[in-house]
Image (cartoon, rainbow, N blue to C red; front, side):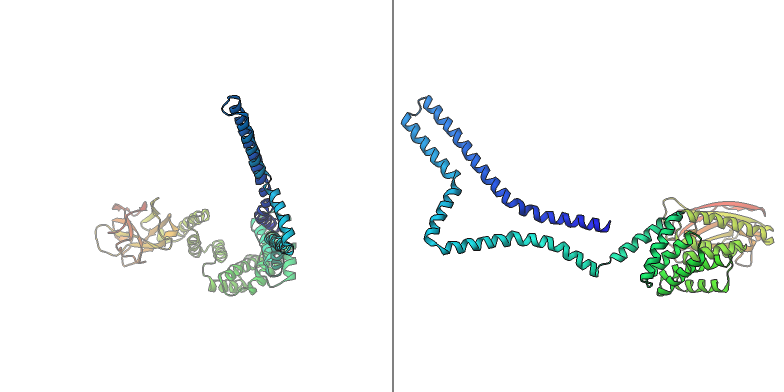
Length: 426
């Protein structure tokens, strides 16, 4: 396809040069012919006019003959102008001899240079371009990019994956210093379940990268296949790869997914929630982010059921979201707090925080969420607030966004509150 497109472009470019050159002489001849035809047509019209004047006796026969002769002479002068020029040239040639021959030769050379040279260049440029590109171009990278793209687009097609493995395998045999070729070779091995071979390819790819985010990405794949090959256990070898990747990029997606999955399968929901929140920050508006928020809510409910302290005393489930027309930086901190409605100015009875990227989200406040000497059970009437802080502190500042609920009595039971953040702090 690459060569077809370049050939088409070169052909189009050549036509822009060749067509005007080739049409130049044709246009000149066509123009001369058109002028001759126009002169003859005018002659016939004028002849008919003279005949009409003679019939109307506006002129006599002698005048008619004189005007007709004059009209024919003019026509002859116009139509055979080129012939006259040729005859004149011959006469001049007889008198000037070598001088005319020299001038004609110079003129022919000029015309040859004027037309022949551009035509020659038109054909030489594509040949030169292809030769130089073959020597210094990046056709190999273009062909490899096609293999990479096919790997990305391949979905559960085993035959395609096998074909790509063959092509990429040949590429790394010819040049084993291509990190991305090794990486996509590992991707295709993973697609067909050959995780041992995938691990070898990923490790080779990672070794060829410097300490960049690309290396962290590949190390994430290394950790994942090692984790799979270790029967889904975080072995010291897997942990070492994870630490190496996070030293380069603490939020490498594959690593966070691996850690969150392992924590969840081991029922370490507190750790799983922290990893899920980091994953949400990577793309807060994605479908995966919505799923992770649901996972967080379910994990929080499990933790609440497992904690005896959370079952004793009041519980407030607070759903926090942004107004539909409000767009904020996903990394801004959000502070959610319950306060004593009867004693203003006191520290929060319960509080937690998250980031805008986690919203919308439901959090639970209970006695275990206390941040000071008093907890929720110490107050009968409370209100709940949510603050988006530009400065990252819990104290409201001008320009922050804050919403406050009505005061209510929790009655030492579970309550549900919904807060929509929309207004700024003045």
